Image 1: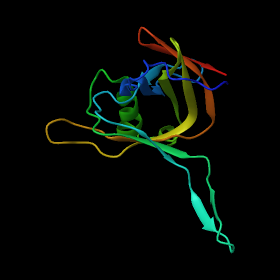
Image 2: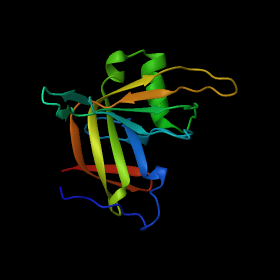
Image 3: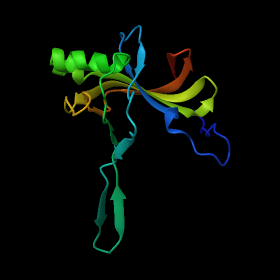
Image 4: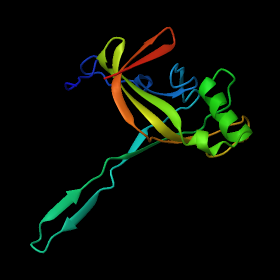
Length: 170
């Protein structure tokens, strides 16, 4: 894939709503991509590159890095019947306590600020860990969610039309 450019207006910053994480609430063969983060005010992907710097006997410093461990936290994540991803996670975590399902979630990151209209760069991860870190609150019930991206990473493009997301792998 050739280098991509940002599709935003020059001089304007990309809006946060152009970086969305989707959870597959369908099946592997017929995915239904449901956005995660409804009612969340701020969330970002964190990259841990496992950086290590060493200085050799001649005083030269060398740095190594590994492929990143990518995590993302959604907090607060207040319960909302219109949030299909949250209901899916609640059933797997709170109702079923299905650890195997929680550590093998199919997820899609859509970078809508790149590429052409209806053809944004996207990354699909086959085995993400999705872990609710709590349940409760004072005025409203929240279920903060921590995601660790894992499994096979496939890149490609995604289009979003009338609320339906379609991913096409490279």
